[in-house]
Amino acid sequence: MTPVVVLGSGGHAAVVIEILEAMGGYEIAGLLWDDDRPGHMVLGHRVIGGEADWTHALERGVAHAAVGLGGWTDNAARRDLFLRARAAGFQVVTPIHPDASVSPSAAVGPGSTVCAGVVVNTGAVIGDDVILAAGATVEHDARVGDHTLISNGAHIGAAATIGSGAVIAIGAVVAGRVTVGADALVSAGAVVVDDVAPGVTVRGVPARS
Image (cartoon, one colour):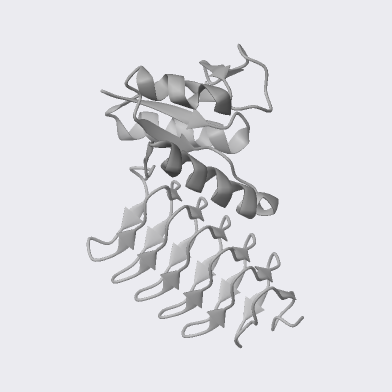
C-alpha cells in the first residue's frame, strides 16, 4: 500500500478519499489542511496538520499527495496548491474512480480527479489538476486544459478545446470543435455553440455573454 496525504478537508477531499479507497493500493496517511483544526475527521481520516507539516510528512516517507480542494470558485486556489505540492517534493496522485470510463488512447494529466460515471473518449487529452465531476463526458479528440473544472453532467463535444482554468458548470454543453478560452465560465445548463473568449462568462441557450 502506498501512503498518501490528502490536501484538503472539505467535500471534495471526501470525494477524493472515496476514490482512492475504491482504486485500492493507497493508504490514507491523514489530511493536511491549514483551514481546519488538527483532529477533525473526514470519513474516518484525521487532519494531522497543515502546510507547515508537509516537510515532516515527506521526511516520514509519505511521498504522495492528493489535491482535495474543489469547487468552481477555487480553480486558482487549487492550481496554486497543486503547484506548491509538486514544488515541495510530493508526487501528486491522479484519482480515477473505477466506475469511470477512460479510453486507453486518452491521456489524463497528474493531479486530475476523475469521478464516478465520467466518460473520457478516444484520443481526448485531459490536462493537469483537472476535476471531471460525476457524470461528465469528454468526447473524442477534445482537449481540456490544466486546472479546469468540468462539473457534474457537463458534456464536452468532439474536438472541442477548453482553456486552462475554465469552469464548465453543471449540465452545460460545449459543442464539438468549439473553443472555450482560459478562465472562462460557462454557466449551469448553458449550451455553447460558438467560441468563448478568455475570461468571459456565458449563459443561456445558445450561450451568450
